[in-house]
Length: 474
Ligand SMILES: *Cc1c(COP(=O)(O)O)cnc(C)c1O
Image (cartoon, rainbow, N blue to C red; front, top):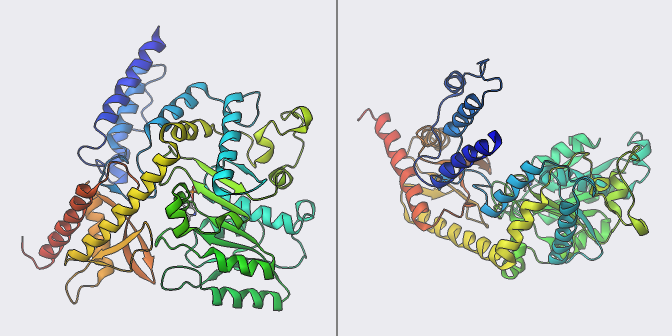
């Protein structure tokens, strides 16, 4: 049958791609104009033609960024775990929506099982949770829950004319907080950004001052976010002083662990980075970042409020789709969600969870931290490089140190660009205290000490090249 051949052909391509994934360059870089031409996107041929279809697939693969390649050190995720890739393929082949038990019986039970396992791991009692489309969405949902928890009438009446609500976050918090403030009718000027200390953590004195100011001005500080692993710098906000402030101000304390929340799998790292997490009101974690599950894969957990997600999310006439379980039990996860169609994300996470186990994931995260320590040591050892700020956790914020008289920012930007276009390596950038940093992130199981050494050598070689060109030498 034709479809058997198609699957064979597909699997051959997949096998070939996967086999070479940690070899060669991480990308065959073309600028957007050239790539557009190369792809021939307007080509009309190919209707009903499988050969033509596979040519498109080959084009795609030829210029895809190989995120499993150890030179891909750019983002908080890299090549996915193989068990989760298996899950993705099955989810694509079976194509269903995880919004009802009827359409997704197995994934619904897997998701419920996983949510309970995660609630137990975090230590949330009698809570509830949801797999969302990522931490951006989870952060918004947590803010929405805090808003509606405080002002249940907002669901019907909106925010018009009420007391002003304020959310307070680390100045380095993820931009999804600003977007949430926009979407939820707060307005971004009611998202207060708290300056950080030398470790990239919210300054508690500054937070306290802002809280008092808001209250004195007649506003309500309803939502405070602790970031567990800030995106650029890797700072962990201290939870204990925030919990003490919560006693006084009665806000909702959300922990954004999109990146650094992965420490919960290791008892040792959890004690070091996230003590008292079990007392927060909500927590989000991306499985698709440090833990390596295929994109997108996230969980949002609420402490104590077992039916809260439903209260917050459900609205409108759902009678055509959702059914009550016997004894009023929630059977359809779509009732707890802001989406209608939901991707089956539970399968890939379930397969990773069973395959690696909690210990395996803990070892992975501990190993990454060890490699980050190694990377920081190497930066200290190599005279061409310098740390811009000391490492707080998993983020290594360094740069090439150009000679006197050459400004570091444009030089490092050019260096990064050169490394990208030549396919040598891709490393992230960001700003810490107004200074550009190269942000090295290790989230790839194919990266070990030799790959880190090779990366730094390649940074140094590229820097030297740029310096040689500047001085007009070949
Ligand atoms: C990555 C990140 C997010 C956004 O997560 P997505 O899953 O990409 O939406 C939010 N917060 C922090 C701290 C992050 O690092």
